[in-house]
Length: 493
Image (cartoon, rainbow, N blue to C red; front, side, top):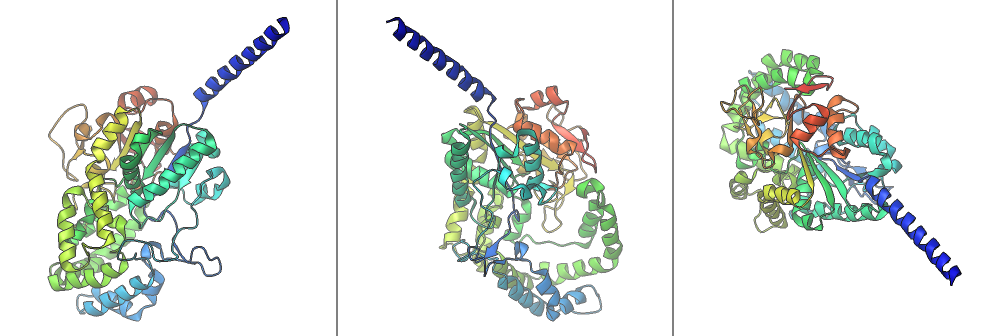
């Protein structure tokens, strides 16, 4: 009997030690992080599964080499720079359409990739096995992945690579498979997901479909496109070019792009611009933008053949503009409302409308939400929204999920604790004002590795400090509005 008691005591002691160790391990276990790129983040291929015949699709479908070798395109484009010569736009647009259409970048009418197309870097293992990812570029999501890996180890960081032309809802299904696999590999109960640019839209679709699983610790939106961009107003035929605004934009980029780090390049462009670029802009504005017949020709022969069947650009249309854009493009003959493409983009339009309620639900049910939006750059000078506050690509009001922003160069009159000291932003109207930060001076995706700006965001991603404006300020000293210089050193605005 004594022997049995001893055995039981040893057994119980073992169970207690093991249980205590397991609890301690669980407390210290690192939450794995999945990072997602945006448009252009993965190379696309034809015949991707055939090593002998695999060929890369031109990035964004823009085969610049073929265009420069096309005599008609070069000749007609050069005429744009000369006020005394007349451009044959029919020839120019036909040839551009031929070149862009031949790249294979466009999807099928149902919004699917052409047979055999895809990416060759869909990984389900950690970035410890893919060190090349960290040095692929010294900015964008790669910088964050490298910085995070430095903090928690590459074995805890995963990259979700995807065909960025396609429907973000279908892409979110692939993300779900990776989340399940990461949990299985690591034994973690939850993951953190970080989405940059279009990756924010993928995360929005994921949140809409799978938030009830409650296995995401943090949703981190980095300059996300989840609520669209006003440049997509091109789908509603809001196409405007103006010499003054284009040249002003180029001048603005001397100091705005990468905090002025590339100012010499833009100065050189501007020196050429007044005489030649200005001439081309004036001619395009007069002959194309203000000429419905030629503008429609541009859409039907160039855009339609290039990328009009790719779902993701459509899914970047702001919610309030969607119906108008659909009507304009269907009337023009570019969008077929009976197609699979329309069904896909309409589905995401509804998801987009639920985004704010979805992130509030996630926060209420235990997940942390981090939203990073940049500002301080004018909108692209292509539409009527050219004076919006942007990060050069995505409008600050959309990336921040609802901030009220002053037009570029203007100031807000309202005061309050959520109004930036430079009076450019009022964060009180954001969906989650206490979980949203604004970086002034960082253009879209250009967070560089090992800089103060990137380190601060990564501390929010993997640190133990609660991701709220007051908590981050108390721990790190940085408030809601952060100024970034050309070396990406940071200070409070």
